Length: 95
Image 1: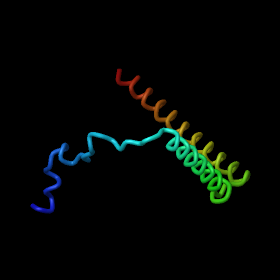
Image 2: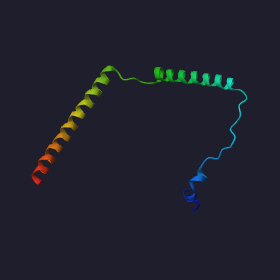
Image 3: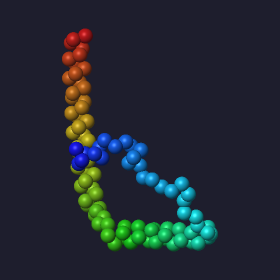
Image 4: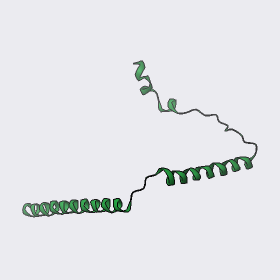
């Protein structure tokens, strides 16, 4: 039972407890400057990752994948059309 004691606690007991008063910042300007620096670094990291770490597919790979998806959609469309046609015919015989 001690291993599963967490499962029987109420939701309120699992909530994180925070101080009613948030941390007070003396000035808004330094925090805004810090946020601008963080945002600039964040977008620089995004750019670096997209340019240097992501392996983009070639045009031939995109074309072959698109053809594969198109063929799959066509096959499933024909399958659903066939099932609909057969079920419509069978329901016409019954009703």
